[in-house]
Image 1 (tube, rainbow, N blue to C red):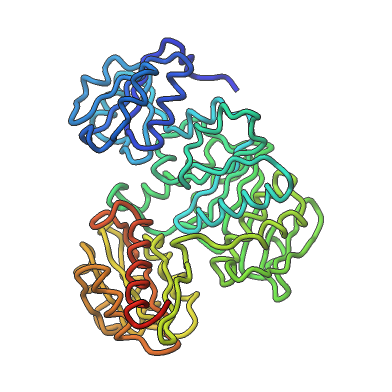
Image 2 (image 1 turned 135 degrees about the vertical axis):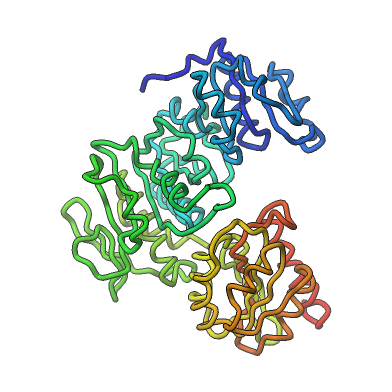
Length: 459
């Protein structure tokens, strides 16, 4: 592939000084670029960063800055949290300055085939599972992207990676131009991040950019049960389209049947029995089918897929069993930051649920929660910034309670629960009104459980 930027001697501004921006700055500086790393936060938010990057020649710019800081740039690299449609970047485009996402930059230099996974829900589970399947096949696999390790870190690995499995978000896909994964999977598509994207259509368009550069020899893996996902697949696509479905459909490359999962790939039919409780339930089966098809798309045999899926032990903060008090189960699903994830979480619980939900309001419609809450919840405890709007959306379903925070919500939930119930933290919101991220929120939930268990005489 022709490299669009020569890098050596280029003036490049990297925007966003978190993990992705730092990794991109280090890479660019190592290739001879003159790098400025800019972030609107104060320098105190990044302890030690100046000492790490200035010896490499990286200029650091903290605090408010305007368009003038970008006028000399030959190129701009955006971190996922940076809105590429803000006024300052619109001005850069008018001047002809190219803007790219970090995953785009990495893809220019990465020789290993890229297997990219996106969707509203299940991305991290599917990405992790796919990496395990390929490792069970004996391949050296980089697993990263939106999952935590920036793709740019894969470029100069010694020895080089044989394959790169990358979770990609709508924020990352907004600023790609040539990004072309060998295999691209779209798991599902429901409302999310409407505090960043102006509409669901804009969010869907960003997701659809995953497929825009695929061509002959590439494979797109798509959920045939999701009409919104199917809608953004290019018409008459030049790549192969592999579908997965929960229906026993003969035309799909992967389908759930009473005996397990039936695959039909390369003119051959095969079957996988699902033996892992962490992948039980419709959502888990869909993730398993998608990961399996992605692995098989690069030649991974079904035997290795089976070994990889059997070894999967679940993810922290994703339907994570925390423990039990007086016959009441506690489940941490802090990663459920949209309505679709909560609907799936409720469906996966056995018996009645006391749901703890709420957090930062991302502008999504909470009304689709009504049916799932009415069917499974005994009560709902609402907390955070979104609580008032969620209460309006759920009014008339089940008893609704307010909590000042997690330390109030967890004991209140136990008061409302009966033996055999599940107390489920599944917020349908991001965490940034009260926490640094969803992991901090989930760990607070688990600590509140442990304190309560100790107070009641548990271990």
